[in-house]
Structure formats: C-alpha cells, structure tokens
Length: 396
Image (cartoon, helix red, strand yellow):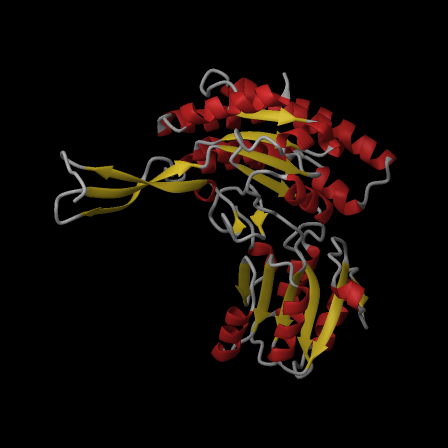
C-alpha cells in the first residue's frame, strides 16, 4: 500500500474512532494486553534478531539497553495496556459548561487530535505505548521505528493489529519502515494532524525542517541536579538513582551541580566513583553540552544558587531539572527562573516519566510547549471543541 493510501485510511479511521464507545476502547486494550502475554516467546525471538544485528554493528551499551525486551518488560507492557484502559475516559467528556442569560448552552468537549504520526528510535516498546495511548485517546496512529528494532517492531505491530482487527476500524494503527516513507509522510498535512519525533537531535531537526504539519518534539534530556548548601535529604541516594538506575534514558542525570558549602560533596563524589561513574571534572563547554547516556557525569561547583541557575539556563534541554534544598525562597527562585517540562524538588530526575506521573504510559516526553509539555498521555493527545446548543437561538 502506498503511503498516501495508508494516510487516507488513517484519516478515515480517525473519524470512526472518535465515535467509538469507551467500552469498545477498553475491549481493544484488553485484547492487546492478552495477546502480548500469549506471544512472549515470539516477541523475544524477534527481539533476539535485532540484538544480534545490533552487536554485530557495535551499537553502544545504552542503545542495546533501550533495544532489549525481556519477559518482564513484555509483562509490564501488558499491565500498562490494562492500566491505560482503566483510566478515566478522555474522549467525548464535557470539560466546561455554562448557560448564557438567553438560555444558550455553551460546552467544551474533549476530542481526539485525529491522526498522529510518530517517528522514534531504538525502543520497540514504543510501538505498544503509542498504540495503547492512541486507542484510549481515539486517535489513529502511524508508527515508524528505527531499523535497529525492525524485527521487534514488526512483531509487536502484528500482534496489536491482529488483536484489534475485529474491534477497531481498518487503518487505526499502521507501521511504516523506510526513510523514504518518512520523507513522504511529512508532506501529508492534509491527512496527518500531528507529527511526534522521539529520538536524537538529528531526527528531531530533520522532522522539524521537513514536516508540513505541527510537530511536538521529544528531544534529548540533558538533565541537571543542583545540591544547595542546606540540602536536608539523602543527596547521595537521590543522585545515584538519577545517574545509575538507567544511565541510557532521557531522564537520567547528566550534570551534577554542587554548592561549595554543602558539607557532603566528597561523600557524593566518592559514591559516584564507587558506583562506576566516570566523573568529568573540570568539565569543558562541550562536556556540559553533552547528554552522556552512560555512566559518566559532568560536575559543576558553584558559590550560590544563582550561579547554578545561570548554568542550567545556558545548557538546559528543557527536559528535567532538579534541586535538593530546604530554603523555600531558593526553591521558588529555581522554579521561577527555569524552563523545563518537569522540575523535581528533593527527588530524582527519574520521576519525569508518564508511568511514574500517573499517565499509565507516555507517547514520549515533550520538550516543546505546544501542544504539550512533558510526558504525553492520552489526555495530552486530545484537544477541545465548543458545542453550542440552542432552541432556535439567533444572534442579535
């Protein structure tokens, strides 16, 4: 099928999806959940092919980590589908309502965006995340994963397609595979309402430069954490969690900023070294601008919180910034001075995640501000329209 025909089918499907009952959406998600559990061996077999090819091509450790599926991760995807299904209904809900003095009823209703195109790298789980959230939010979705996960992506798509074929309209969920497909789909603004690139800067910049429809970018996470002199929580535990739990993900800590007056700086640095983290200090301009995605961290020493804020302003990717402090005025200054999709106060940067923040899953973490900022769940994949109901009303 040509990309144009695929996009037209997605547009037609989106108009049907908007009118589906919530019970139908829940049933579709339940079917996907069960199908994933019934197909664990098949999924792992295809994922093994991707991993073997990745090792032959000398892909990095963090890339292999993002590419790997396990029995547990497949089980977690199944649970995610159930959790998303059980969340509150988002499509068709009246979010505001008022009646004018002349009796005209004015309401705002939440509706799907329509057709979403999503281009992503490395992570085959995104096929399931994107499909599940599209089902819940009533959108059609066209997915394009990286070639490094081609076998896993195809298998997961096939499972989802077969599980929902009798419930959802044809064209609700599609998979494309080539760069040529991407180049073509970026031109189809007549049929696609939003493009969501999720990956490295090269991908993001390419989509931004070539898309003819609105783009919500899910860019890199150059995340900072500042330890103020009055820090009263266990800074070492938080920093180790932020840096070492999963170094290759976008909400992992990349630059640690330490106040010179904090008494336990040496304890923190020793703990990082003992955890196998390479400390970059003194760091260069290039180091501070690097998203390491491995057990490596840049260190910045500052005299006060203002200096920390200025450093973050210069290098922030608008993803996640964290502060460990007790003084409310310092925390307030941090909040009001920085532009990021999530500010973590006395907590790890790793909490900027759709599942952790109660969304069930995420399409990704938007570093744009329009149409969403931060993790995009089902609600962030909708918009609102006005419904005006009268009884023969005319405008005077």
